[in-house]
Length: 140
Image 1: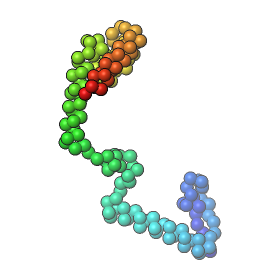
Image 2 (image 1 turned 30 degrees about the vertical axis):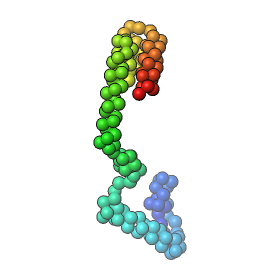
Image 3 (image 1 turned 135 degrees about the vertical axis):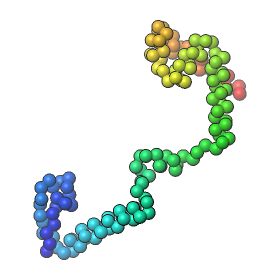
Image 4 (image 1 turned 135 degrees about the horizontal axis):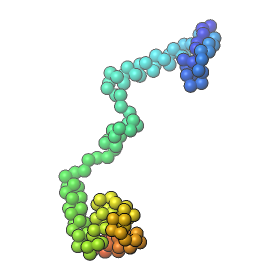
């Protein structure tokens, strides 16, 4: 029979040293587990596999999402340019408010405060402008 310290095995549960006598078979299982974990850590170090895909540093995202092709980049740029040109063809206030809302990231409340206008006017104007843009791009 051997004595083990439960605080070493379960530090969350046991805050003080608690010794328990266990059989040799149980001691052998604990020792085998400790060796297996040490081997795993050595292998991770040796094979430079310190990163887990779940470690939340962008590795998983970089693997799962493929980079855009040059054609996709060009198509996206052309679409953005067309959209910008269509927004600038709207009446001045609609274009200005849509630009502020979607390009500059301002909230409707911030736009209304900057223009000293009621928020409902901004909402309605942006909504009309977006409908006009949707109709324009349906034709294309």
